[in-house]
Image (cartoon, rainbow, N blue to C red; front, side):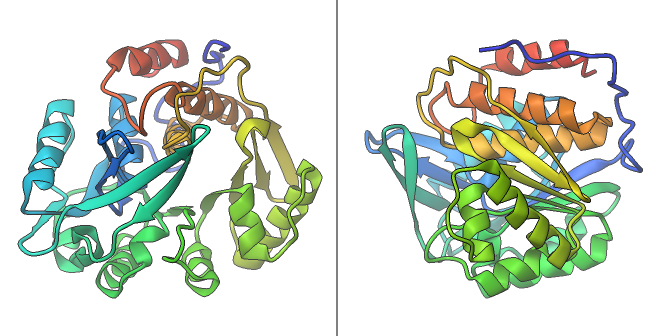
Length: 319
Protein backbone atom coordinates (compact mmCIF):
# COMPACT_ATOMS: atom_id res chain seq x y z
CA UNK A 1 0.00 0.00 0.00
CA UNK A 2 1.26 3.48 -0.76
CA UNK A 3 2.10 5.69 2.20
CA UNK A 4 -0.54 8.25 3.20
CA UNK A 5 0.23 11.38 1.24
CA UNK A 6 1.77 14.47 2.75
CA UNK A 7 2.03 17.90 1.22
CA UNK A 8 2.35 21.61 1.98
CA UNK A 9 -1.29 22.44 1.25
CA UNK A 10 -2.41 21.69 4.82
CA UNK A 11 -3.74 24.49 6.98
CA UNK A 12 -5.24 22.81 10.06
CA UNK A 13 -8.61 24.16 11.05
CA UNK A 14 -8.87 26.35 7.96
CA UNK A 15 -11.98 24.84 6.41
CA UNK A 16 -14.38 27.48 5.08
CA UNK A 17 -16.18 28.79 8.15
CA UNK A 18 -15.62 25.52 10.02
CA UNK A 19 -12.57 26.33 12.18
CA UNK A 20 -13.04 25.69 15.90
CA UNK A 21 -16.34 23.88 15.45
CA UNK A 22 -17.42 20.28 15.99
CA UNK A 23 -18.83 17.80 13.48
CA UNK A 24 -22.25 16.60 14.64
CA UNK A 25 -22.93 12.97 13.70
CA UNK A 26 -26.52 11.70 13.76
CA UNK A 27 -27.76 8.15 13.31
CA UNK A 28 -27.58 4.49 14.17
CA UNK A 29 -25.32 2.78 16.67
CA UNK A 30 -25.36 -1.01 16.44
CA UNK A 31 -23.33 -4.18 16.47
CA UNK A 32 -22.35 -6.00 13.28
CA UNK A 33 -22.60 -9.72 14.03
CA UNK A 34 -20.46 -11.92 11.76
CA UNK A 35 -21.04 -15.57 10.81
CA UNK A 36 -18.48 -16.80 13.36
CA UNK A 37 -20.34 -14.95 16.14
CA UNK A 38 -17.91 -12.06 16.33
CA UNK A 39 -19.62 -8.83 17.40
CA UNK A 40 -18.13 -5.57 16.12
CA UNK A 41 -19.41 -2.15 17.10
CA UNK A 42 -20.73 -0.37 14.02
CA UNK A 43 -23.34 1.66 12.26
CA UNK A 44 -22.16 4.21 9.69
CA UNK A 45 -22.53 7.25 12.00
CA UNK A 46 -20.74 5.51 14.86
CA UNK A 47 -17.95 4.42 12.52
CA UNK A 48 -17.48 7.94 11.19
CA UNK A 49 -17.48 9.45 14.69
CA UNK A 50 -15.00 6.81 15.91
CA UNK A 51 -12.54 7.64 13.13
CA UNK A 52 -12.99 11.40 13.49
CA UNK A 53 -12.21 11.21 17.19
CA UNK A 54 -9.07 9.16 16.59
CA UNK A 55 -7.97 11.63 13.90
CA UNK A 56 -8.08 14.46 16.43
CA UNK A 57 -11.48 16.03 15.86
CA UNK A 58 -14.21 16.23 18.51
CA UNK A 59 -17.39 14.72 17.05
CA UNK A 60 -20.68 14.88 18.90
CA UNK A 61 -22.56 11.63 18.25
CA UNK A 62 -26.36 11.78 18.57
CA UNK A 63 -27.95 8.34 18.77
CA UNK A 64 -30.00 6.00 20.97
CA UNK A 65 -29.11 2.63 22.47
CA UNK A 66 -30.98 0.07 24.55
CA UNK A 67 -30.84 -0.42 28.30
CA UNK A 68 -29.29 -3.84 27.75
CA UNK A 69 -26.00 -5.71 27.62
CA UNK A 70 -25.10 -4.48 24.14
CA UNK A 71 -25.94 -0.91 25.15
CA UNK A 72 -23.56 -1.22 28.07
CA UNK A 73 -20.90 -2.53 25.70
CA UNK A 74 -21.41 0.54 23.48
CA UNK A 75 -20.88 2.91 26.42
CA UNK A 76 -17.83 0.97 27.62
CA UNK A 77 -16.25 1.01 24.15
CA UNK A 78 -16.83 4.71 23.53
CA UNK A 79 -15.67 5.65 27.02
CA UNK A 80 -12.52 3.55 26.59
CA UNK A 81 -11.89 5.22 23.24
CA UNK A 82 -12.25 8.64 24.92
CA UNK A 83 -15.33 9.75 23.00
CA UNK A 84 -18.02 12.14 24.20
CA UNK A 85 -21.10 10.04 25.11
CA UNK A 86 -23.32 12.98 26.12
CA UNK A 87 -25.38 12.69 22.91
CA UNK A 88 -26.33 9.03 23.47
CA UNK A 89 -29.88 8.38 24.67
CA UNK A 90 -30.94 5.26 26.59
CA UNK A 91 -34.19 3.59 25.53
CA UNK A 92 -35.91 1.60 28.31
CA UNK A 93 -37.74 -0.74 25.92
CA UNK A 94 -36.14 -1.09 22.47
CA UNK A 95 -32.91 -3.09 22.10
CA UNK A 96 -29.54 -1.81 21.00
CA UNK A 97 -29.24 -2.11 17.23
CA UNK A 98 -27.82 -5.20 15.60
CA UNK A 99 -27.09 -6.34 12.05
CA UNK A 100 -26.30 -9.84 10.81
CA UNK A 101 -23.40 -9.62 8.35
CA UNK A 102 -22.76 -12.28 5.70
CA UNK A 103 -19.53 -12.23 3.69
CA UNK A 104 -19.09 -13.35 0.10
CA UNK A 105 -15.46 -13.05 -0.94
CA UNK A 106 -14.96 -10.30 1.63
CA UNK A 107 -17.92 -8.26 0.40
CA UNK A 108 -20.71 -7.85 2.97
CA UNK A 109 -24.47 -8.22 2.84
CA UNK A 110 -26.58 -7.02 5.75
CA UNK A 111 -29.72 -8.22 7.52
CA UNK A 112 -30.82 -5.14 9.47
CA UNK A 113 -33.23 -5.86 12.33
CA UNK A 114 -36.35 -3.69 12.64
CA UNK A 115 -37.50 -1.58 15.62
CA UNK A 116 -34.17 -0.88 17.27
CA UNK A 117 -33.36 1.79 19.84
CA UNK A 118 -31.85 4.14 17.25
CA UNK A 119 -35.19 4.15 15.40
CA UNK A 120 -36.62 5.98 18.43
CA UNK A 121 -34.15 8.86 18.50
CA UNK A 122 -35.78 11.69 20.48
CA UNK A 123 -35.51 15.08 18.78
CA UNK A 124 -35.86 17.18 21.94
CA UNK A 125 -33.18 15.23 23.79
CA UNK A 126 -30.89 15.48 20.76
CA UNK A 127 -31.43 19.25 20.59
CA UNK A 128 -30.62 19.56 24.30
CA UNK A 129 -27.33 17.72 23.72
CA UNK A 130 -26.40 20.42 21.21
CA UNK A 131 -26.56 23.24 23.77
CA UNK A 132 -23.17 24.93 23.80
CA UNK A 133 -22.00 23.11 20.67
CA UNK A 134 -21.01 25.05 17.55
CA UNK A 135 -21.66 22.57 14.71
CA UNK A 136 -19.22 22.62 11.83
CA UNK A 137 -21.52 20.38 9.84
CA UNK A 138 -24.25 17.83 10.42
CA UNK A 139 -23.56 14.35 9.08
CA UNK A 140 -26.17 11.63 8.72
CA UNK A 141 -26.97 8.63 6.55
CA UNK A 142 -30.22 7.42 5.06
CA UNK A 143 -30.96 4.43 7.33
CA UNK A 144 -31.84 6.67 10.30
CA UNK A 145 -34.83 7.98 8.31
CA UNK A 146 -36.44 4.53 7.97
CA UNK A 147 -38.80 4.99 10.95
CA UNK A 148 -40.99 7.99 11.79
CA UNK A 149 -39.63 8.97 15.25
CA UNK A 150 -36.00 9.09 14.14
CA UNK A 151 -36.91 10.66 10.80
CA UNK A 152 -38.77 13.48 12.57
CA UNK A 153 -35.86 13.99 14.97
CA UNK A 154 -33.38 14.12 12.10
CA UNK A 155 -35.33 16.66 10.07
CA UNK A 156 -35.83 18.80 13.17
CA UNK A 157 -32.09 18.78 13.85
CA UNK A 158 -31.34 19.71 10.25
CA UNK A 159 -33.52 22.78 10.65
CA UNK A 160 -32.47 23.80 14.15
CA UNK A 161 -28.70 23.60 13.77
CA UNK A 162 -28.52 25.61 10.57
CA UNK A 163 -25.28 23.73 9.87
CA UNK A 164 -24.31 22.59 6.38
CA UNK A 165 -25.42 19.01 5.72
CA UNK A 166 -23.33 15.99 4.74
CA UNK A 167 -25.50 13.04 3.66
CA UNK A 168 -23.90 9.60 3.40
CA UNK A 169 -26.28 7.48 1.34
CA UNK A 170 -26.57 3.86 2.47
CA UNK A 171 -29.31 2.02 0.60
CA UNK A 172 -30.23 -1.01 2.68
CA UNK A 173 -33.19 -3.07 1.41
CA UNK A 174 -36.00 -2.85 2.30
CA UNK A 175 -35.37 0.25 4.42
CA UNK A 176 -35.34 2.97 1.77
CA UNK A 177 -37.27 4.60 -1.05
CA UNK A 178 -36.14 6.89 -3.84
CA UNK A 179 -38.55 9.57 -2.63
CA UNK A 180 -37.20 9.56 0.94
CA UNK A 181 -33.54 9.56 -0.07
CA UNK A 182 -34.03 12.35 -2.59
CA UNK A 183 -35.74 14.43 0.10
CA UNK A 184 -32.71 13.89 2.36
CA UNK A 185 -30.10 14.90 -0.20
CA UNK A 186 -32.05 17.95 -1.35
CA UNK A 187 -30.29 20.96 0.10
CA UNK A 188 -27.27 19.00 1.34
CA UNK A 189 -23.93 20.60 0.62
CA UNK A 190 -22.07 17.29 0.43
CA UNK A 191 -23.39 13.87 -0.59
CA UNK A 192 -21.47 10.59 -0.72
CA UNK A 193 -22.70 7.37 -2.30
CA UNK A 194 -21.35 4.45 -4.29
CA UNK A 195 -21.81 3.83 -8.00
CA UNK A 196 -24.53 1.24 -7.46
CA UNK A 197 -26.50 3.66 -5.29
CA UNK A 198 -26.02 6.36 -7.91
CA UNK A 199 -27.58 4.08 -10.50
CA UNK A 200 -30.51 3.26 -8.23
CA UNK A 201 -31.28 6.90 -7.46
CA UNK A 202 -30.98 8.14 -11.04
CA UNK A 203 -32.55 5.16 -12.80
CA UNK A 204 -29.59 4.86 -15.17
CA UNK A 205 -28.39 1.51 -16.41
CA UNK A 206 -25.20 0.17 -14.79
CA UNK A 207 -22.05 1.44 -16.49
CA UNK A 208 -18.49 0.18 -16.27
CA UNK A 209 -16.89 3.43 -17.41
CA UNK A 210 -16.37 6.35 -15.03
CA UNK A 211 -17.65 8.74 -17.70
CA UNK A 212 -21.12 7.24 -17.49
CA UNK A 213 -21.16 7.60 -13.72
CA UNK A 214 -19.97 11.19 -14.02
CA UNK A 215 -22.92 12.07 -16.24
CA UNK A 216 -25.31 10.55 -13.71
CA UNK A 217 -23.53 12.37 -10.86
CA UNK A 218 -23.73 15.70 -12.68
CA UNK A 219 -27.45 15.18 -13.26
CA UNK A 220 -28.13 14.30 -9.61
CA UNK A 221 -26.03 17.19 -8.27
CA UNK A 222 -27.73 19.76 -10.48
CA UNK A 223 -31.22 18.46 -9.71
CA UNK A 224 -30.76 18.68 -5.95
CA UNK A 225 -28.39 21.62 -5.57
CA UNK A 226 -25.47 19.57 -4.21
CA UNK A 227 -22.11 21.37 -4.06
CA UNK A 228 -19.96 18.23 -3.96
CA UNK A 229 -21.16 14.77 -4.93
CA UNK A 230 -18.68 12.02 -4.06
CA UNK A 231 -19.02 8.65 -5.79
CA UNK A 232 -17.01 5.65 -4.58
CA UNK A 233 -16.37 2.87 -7.11
CA UNK A 234 -14.83 0.00 -5.15
CA UNK A 235 -11.50 -1.12 -6.56
CA UNK A 236 -11.85 1.55 -9.27
CA UNK A 237 -11.40 4.33 -6.72
CA UNK A 238 -13.69 7.33 -6.46
CA UNK A 239 -14.48 10.69 -7.98
CA UNK A 240 -16.12 13.89 -6.80
CA UNK A 241 -18.36 16.05 -8.99
CA UNK A 242 -17.89 19.73 -8.16
CA UNK A 243 -19.81 22.32 -10.14
CA UNK A 244 -19.08 21.37 -13.74
CA UNK A 245 -16.04 19.15 -13.33
CA UNK A 246 -14.90 15.85 -11.92
CA UNK A 247 -11.82 15.04 -9.83
CA UNK A 248 -10.92 11.34 -9.76
CA UNK A 249 -8.65 9.21 -7.61
CA UNK A 250 -7.44 5.61 -7.62
CA UNK A 251 -7.05 3.34 -4.58
CA UNK A 252 -3.59 2.25 -3.45
CA UNK A 253 -2.19 -0.97 -4.87
CA UNK A 254 -1.61 -4.25 -3.09
CA UNK A 255 -4.49 -3.95 -0.64
CA UNK A 256 -4.74 -6.78 1.87
CA UNK A 257 -8.50 -7.22 2.23
CA UNK A 258 -9.98 -8.97 5.27
CA UNK A 259 -13.41 -7.47 4.58
CA UNK A 260 -14.78 -4.26 3.12
CA UNK A 261 -17.24 -3.57 5.96
CA UNK A 262 -17.07 0.12 6.82
CA UNK A 263 -14.70 1.12 4.02
CA UNK A 264 -17.14 3.79 2.87
CA UNK A 265 -17.48 5.12 6.42
CA UNK A 266 -13.70 5.38 6.72
CA UNK A 267 -13.71 7.31 3.44
CA UNK A 268 -16.42 9.66 4.76
CA UNK A 269 -14.51 10.34 7.98
CA UNK A 270 -11.42 11.45 6.09
CA UNK A 271 -13.54 13.49 3.68
CA UNK A 272 -15.01 15.36 6.66
CA UNK A 273 -11.52 15.76 8.11
CA UNK A 274 -10.42 17.35 4.85
CA UNK A 275 -13.37 19.74 4.93
CA UNK A 276 -12.62 20.84 8.48
CA UNK A 277 -8.87 21.06 7.93
CA UNK A 278 -9.05 22.93 4.65
CA UNK A 279 -7.38 20.33 2.41
CA UNK A 280 -7.73 20.67 -1.33
CA UNK A 281 -9.98 18.18 -3.14
CA UNK A 282 -7.23 16.02 -4.66
CA UNK A 283 -5.44 15.66 -1.33
CA UNK A 284 -8.66 14.78 0.47
CA UNK A 285 -9.63 12.22 -2.16
CA UNK A 286 -6.24 10.50 -2.07
CA UNK A 287 -6.17 10.34 1.72
CA UNK A 288 -9.75 9.10 1.95
CA UNK A 289 -8.96 6.24 -0.44
CA UNK A 290 -5.76 5.40 1.46
CA UNK A 291 -7.56 5.27 4.79
CA UNK A 292 -10.45 3.20 3.42
CA UNK A 293 -7.86 0.68 2.19
CA UNK A 294 -6.35 0.49 5.67
CA UNK A 295 -9.77 -0.30 7.18
CA UNK A 296 -10.25 -3.08 4.61
CA UNK A 297 -7.30 -4.75 6.33
CA UNK A 298 -9.08 -5.15 9.67
CA UNK A 299 -12.15 -7.15 10.71
CA UNK A 300 -15.20 -4.90 10.78
CA UNK A 301 -15.61 -1.17 10.34
CA UNK A 302 -13.51 0.18 13.21
CA UNK A 303 -10.28 -0.68 14.97
CA UNK A 304 -8.81 -0.01 18.40
CA UNK A 305 -5.30 -0.04 16.93
CA UNK A 306 -4.26 3.57 17.50
CA UNK A 307 -1.08 3.06 15.46
CA UNK A 308 -3.14 3.31 12.27
CA UNK A 309 -4.54 6.68 13.28
CA UNK A 310 -1.28 7.96 14.76
CA UNK A 311 0.54 7.14 11.54
CA UNK A 312 -2.00 9.01 9.45
CA UNK A 313 -2.02 11.99 11.81
CA UNK A 314 1.75 12.22 11.70
CA UNK A 315 2.00 11.96 7.92
CA UNK A 316 -0.93 14.32 7.38
CA UNK A 317 0.40 16.73 10.02
CA UNK A 318 -2.77 16.71 12.06
CA UNK A 319 -2.38 18.27 15.50
